[in-house]
Length: 228
Image 1 (cartoon, helix red, strand yellow):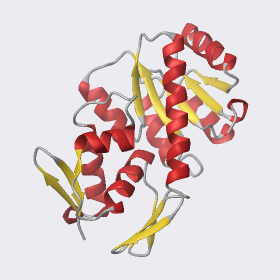
Image 2 (cartoon, one colour; image 1 turned 90 degrees about the vertical axis):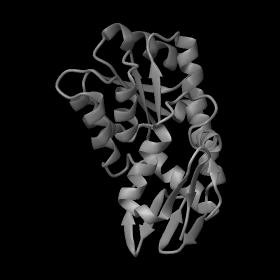
Image 3 (cartoon, rainbow, N blue to C red; image 1 turned 90 degrees about the horizontal axis):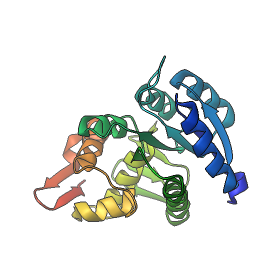
Image 4 (cartoon, rainbow, N blue to C red; image 1 turned 60 degrees about the vertical axis):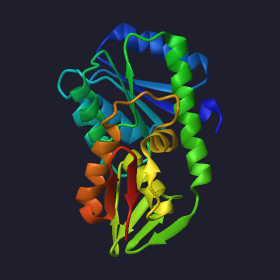
């Protein structure tokens, strides 16, 4: 996909941030749309179907966490890449963002060129994952459709946030194999992304709630595995 075909939705209540980031993304050829709060963001996301959403956390009317949750449950936006761009670096804030279905978390302040580089990496990794994972495999009562990002559990279709899906696809690719935490971070989040140590744990907890606790085993000090 060429840059000019990529739609980016930038959401922030600070006008100078919108202008600076929009300008630098436009220079790269991306189609850039903006919104100043969560309500406007959700509305534009439904209409524009962006490939990437860059979302502030603290905003009036509706914050970024709630907007992210709504987008993740909106048909057509399940696979949209969502990254938070915010000055809030507290651990609880990051966990709330990933819990809501975010793919990444970028802290302000950040130089425009560095931000553009991170965005390129996110889009590139997403494209590579879609190319590598274009197949369907069955594990027990689960059917993992990597091409369409769908999961069928006991005959019922489930829609998972992107990172939960990618984590599930990785673990189920080799049942009973223990995936080390550093391998999971590299395969699911990529080397370019710096996430907190509890990020994997949050996503595993969500998968346990949706798929079943017995299928996910923790190997203390090492990582996780999927068991039938």
